[in-house]
Amino acid sequence: MIYSIRGKITYIGGDFVVIECAGIGYMVNTTLTTIGDISSNHDEVTLYAHLSVREDGISLFGFSTCDELKAFELLISVSGVGPKAGLAILSAMTPQSFAVAVAAGDAKAFTKAKGVGPKAAQKIIIELKDKVSKETELLGEASSADFSTDGMPDAKEAVLALTALGYSQSEAASAVARLDKALPVEELIKGALKLLAQGM
Image (tube, rainbow, N blue to C red; front, side, top):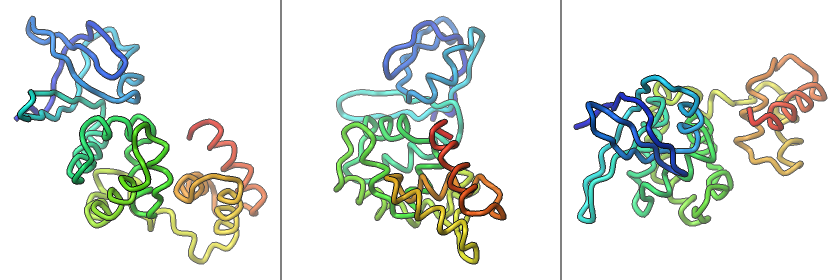
């Protein structure tokens, strides 16, 4: 079992990097997020790895954080969701927003990833809801309880307003959760819109 790979980046492709380790160049499939994290690092980098052994070959996947690796392994545990779809999803959302979308039952969030349709999105939610709830420590802001607006009418109203503007429930809840819940609803909406515009 390979836990991680450490070495110098010698090439960056669209969805993979080549890392030279002990004189060998390893092709490591990865996400746009990880590529963005490591592309400016001209020294050695460390990627947390997943080795896939299948009939049609052996593939190595690497991620800049343990959270991203864990999210990837959860995704590919879903029947019908392969590594390519897993990388596409984690290129479109962070491990935390992935976990929030699962906890909130937000299928729409997954369909934004290339090649992921409504049926696959629903399957991800159904098969991972219980698993994600047990991984809150590893995935950070993963529990839907972290984004609860119970007892906070202004926060709840802000989330409703944002969803009316076209944002998904998990996007809206995640943005509002980053703000001071004591703010008036107008300020919560303005602050959340600013965070969403910045990609949070």
